[in-house]
Each structure stands twice: as structure tokens, then as C-alpha cells.
Image (tube, rainbow, N blue to C red):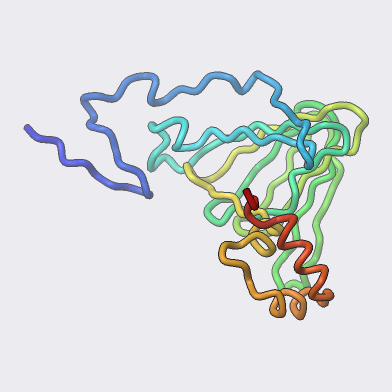
Amino acid sequence: MVFLAVFVNGKFCKDPKSVTANDFSYSGLNIARNTTNFLGSNVTTVDVNKIPGLNTLGVSLARLDFAQGGQNPPHIHPRATEILVVTKGKLLVGFVSSNQDNNRLFYKVLKRGDVFVFPIGLIHFQMNVRRTRAVAFAGFGSQNPGTIRIADAVFGSNPSIPQEVLAKAFQLDVKLVRFLHIVFGPPLW
């Protein structure tokens, strides 16, 4: 019998006869990640790309590490609601509602053991407000939630959104928009 590859949710399913326990397993979420970057954070995702057995199951996970003052900047998950639990430190978290709801900010400072939900597709963020490291774990209602960081997408698109469009949309001087294109744009090497 010949197995024909099935393409589901953007991924090819394995031949069921070749599936092993390793297709449903990931090790290493107990390891603190490097947060010595500009944002002071590191997100370790465990999605269908790391656990092939998640394909079609509708769930995934991430570990978020934060240095002092570190943040996971404003972003969205286009295919998932996120539920976050703090396991170490204190995080300021929040999301912005829709235009129809006057773009209200819902935010809270969470401590160890606290949980917060970010509805699908809404801009949200997390920031460490303690002088020590912080750690959180996030669950997603998708095996492939996707992440779009707002500043990267707007000022770092390829090709670039025209500077005049961004200057008018954000009420900024074109020179500042040029600078932001350099900061968020693709590397020049």
C-alpha cells in the first residue's frame, strides 16, 4: 500500500507507520534562555515546527524569559488566543481592544501563579517590572499561532511601506520614518 502525503494546516502529515514518540515530544523548556538582546527577552516556541504530532491538534506552547525591564513588544497572533501564566517575577501585561471598542487598553500586573488571556488577533505585550528575571509560559489555541510584531511589520516590511504613508498614518516627520525603516528594516550587509 502506498501512502500519499496529506497537506494539512500548511504541513505535510507523516506516514502513520513512520510516526514515533519523538513526534509528540520536546525537551528543554526548563532551560533559561539568553535575554541579552535589545528587547531583554527570549521566546521559545513549541509549535508544530518542533513537535510534528501537533499538526491538526489546535494547541502549542511557549516559554518567555525576561531580563530586568525586558519586554515582549506589541504583537499579534493571527491564528490563536493566548493564555499566559507567570512562574517567576512580575509582568505588566495588556492588550488593546478593537477600533469599535475605542481601542481600550486592558492591562494588569501579574505575579507568580497569575494568569491572563489575550484574545485572538488583538495587539498585546508583556514587560518585566521587577529587578530580577521573570519567566512565563503561554498556551495557544493553535498548533501554529504565528506572531507579527507590530513595529517590525510596519517599519520593517520588505519592500518598505512608502514613507509618506507611514508619516501621515503615524503623524510623524518623514525623516523619523526613514530612521525607523533603518532600525526595523532588513540588515544592510
